[in-house]
Length: 366
Ligand SMILES: Cc1cc2nc3c(=O)[nH]c(=O)nc-3n(C[C@H](O)[C@H](O)[C@H](O)COP(=O)(O)OP(=O)(O)OC[C@H]3O[C@@H](n4cnc5c(N)ncnc54)[C@H](O)[C@@H]3O)c2cc1C
Image 1 (cartoon, rainbow, N blue to C red):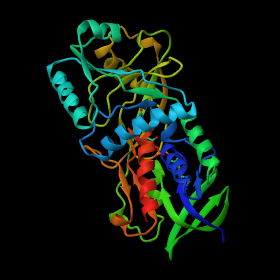
Image 2 (cartoon, protein in one colour):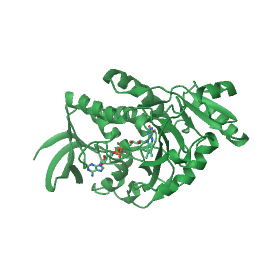
Image 3 (cartoon, rainbow, N blue to C red):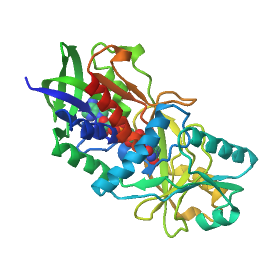
Image 4 (cartoon, protein in one colour):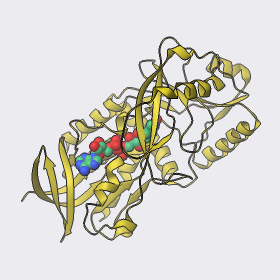
């Protein structure tokens, strides 16, 4: 039977970032059940590099977002990944929302993000023409990235070292044995086994399902998963925006915001809807809801130019309240060599290289 040092389940931004980093030290295989890398959440998001504003101080989200942002901008420079530090305007429409902006400034400072500043009405009109807001904040370090090119660069990086990416291969189950795991995989209908010393479950929306197939991990150890779909509408035609435009955040997401991609295409979303299974179907009847949400900050939006686009699904750990990333190692589940990553929703793309650094340090220290 073949033996490898580390098996990573899942070739999204998180699994690939860990593989790229860890392959500098260890032999790593990343298996992906789909035909291509990044077919799930990593290609169904806003492609925004977040500044690190919103998350509770000392949370894993805050730490990994701020550290990951710096690592990601540097990585894009080093590997020629298309990126733009566009900056974003966060808008407030009334006194209650202005209070939210005041809290956001304080939260950002606690998280080590000290570059937010208030915009005067003149600056607001210059930075965000046609935008209606009582007050606005500007975050200069927010940016956009080509996530597909980012993932390609990670595969290039890992293949230059001791890493291998294998598509069409599904993790089925694992049994802890002395010094590692016996793993069963399915490669295009053929089942085979291998042994590995370390196992990393970076399965995104499937992480809980995978964990349930690891002997010794029982339900109390595995957090619940709730699928929260967010869909986007693209805007056909010209628009006046050079920066990203956000409302104040809402309970499950950042509100229906406007992002411009690297090709200049304007897009709005994501909304939030809890669903029972992984289903990327979009619902064009959400048009009225989107139109009303956008009109609050961009009254000149033309409804006829909004077209349903795509949807992504957030791997929520609960249906209400703040939640954090979970990076779970032996100290929690008592199985040596196993790391499970749960609830890696936004800002997981921004945070991915920092998460990879932490996971690598934990494995190297073992
Ligand atoms: C609507 C939306 C908008 C977002 N916007 C942003 C944003 O603007 N900025 C930001 O920083 N973050 C954003 N995020 C979050 C970010 O996209 C995710 O945190 C990140 O992509 C998660 O990556 P991942 O590798 O954990 O998961 P995934 O990309 O889902 O990858 C997991 C992979 O594991 C594979 N897999 C699972 N189980 C198995 C198995 N048994 N065998 C083999 N393969 C398996 C899956 O097929 C999948 O490819 C957004 C998320 C959503 C849903």
